[in-house]
Length: 367
Image (tube, one colour):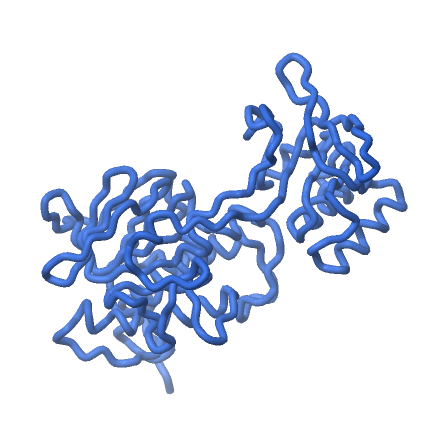
């Protein structure tokens, strides 16, 4: 059920006002928490549209570690970021949420009737009763490698993620960085398997890492076995042949610049959080995060909620499962706004015939 990039599947017969799509909820962010917000809203029969700057759903796990195992999703012993995304998309399928991908929310304007007019960078407009911000760390951008002229190899030989591991197989690969992503991918491409590179060099500015100790130990063991190399230094230039990157220049701690052959360059300097237009919406912000209450995860503006890594509150833990909990309370917090004349009661998917109907499943018969 993965939506096509930039597709705008709209539920049948949407109401419009001056070109704006009327809806119950707009969710900003299609990562795991944004997708689960669709589910929690759907159980309460709240219609939603999802907007994301990336051209595909999944957010940070899909963008940065689609093949990396995740172990702390309840009842799922292990799954990758991509598998989690696919399972969530399957789970929300009954609710028919509309996806608007490859675009950012550029404006949010409160309306006299309490709704919000939401506009995107592609000219889409929504008139929504509620707004859910599930934008993770915002419209995040990988921190770039600052070497003059090297950016022209972006997407061909220079990459900031490994979404397609097969393209690195059999290549002379240099991985730059000292965090978990750099170590994880260096180990992946240096180990036996279909994606093994011809050679792997891990390059970091110092002989110290912000990564799991077990990964560091395994990396050093592979270096001792001559299956990969670790080099202390920083990229300060490159060489090319026939318009293609052929080597990088590495300034070592000893002040000597060495030339390292490279077919492919993977850079993991982390993410640069960018709240973007969210910073201009008049919301209470603390250290680039949205301040919320813990009753319904409302922001300082009634009708606007924030869930997942974008929010902050006392005791906040940046875990996917914490975001899932926040989604449930935010949905119930939104229900009185969407249905002001209706009392919304807590029901259980195990026993509620109404929820079974909403989910499109047969109600079980109990003896």
